[in-house]
Length: 277
Image (cartoon, rainbow, N blue to C red; front, side, top):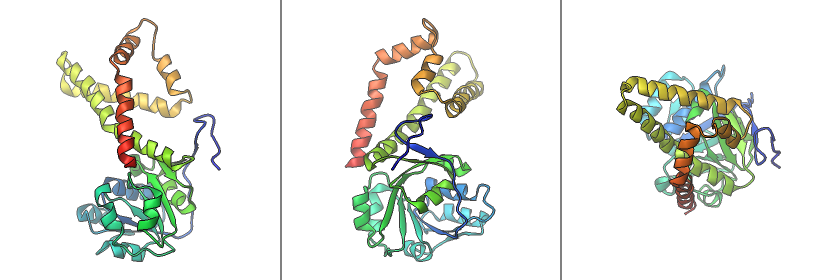
């Protein structure tokens, strides 16, 4: 049962970091950006981090982590990862997920945490049988500093133990909602491109490039801090930054009239459709 936390949202419960002193071993199949962020985050402020086993793919990333953290080990094969760990994180790209996962020999005691965006639980259970406990998750790069907010489904104590080490947790009520959350992460680059446009416009109007970038980073970085601090809805925050007849209202109105919000919705709809296919 998901208990709403009304000060933030009426759909999900957001819980803070949790720690568990019980021994655990973690294996990562796939060593890309998210794996690196999770491994880094699992060491942030941890006096006794757990044993971690990494797949051989992406050896440069794995070797770098193994050199920095004595409890991190690069394995000779993906199967060796499974043979040494009980909680397995799948961080491979969707196009190769089937080929990678179905070649592995899972055991009933394995808990599988999948960060593969487009593979549903039904498929994962078939691919990873006889592993009985499977969770889908959307870890974020901010996990690196222990400040991530990981969406996961369904609820699982061992998944909570891992992701609780790297930040907060968000547990939606059903798998379809998790897929929508995953789709929303596709807006990161577009948001940064929007900021690039603003900084570029400043540079075109006489502000040197470095100052334009510094100013844009500062303004929106501080706005991001206020998003984490304030409990108002996003619409209320927008209203607070909008003076009737003012310049913020002018830009927002022009963008709405140009259909920007609808374009964003349509793009997200197409991403969600892609993930579900």
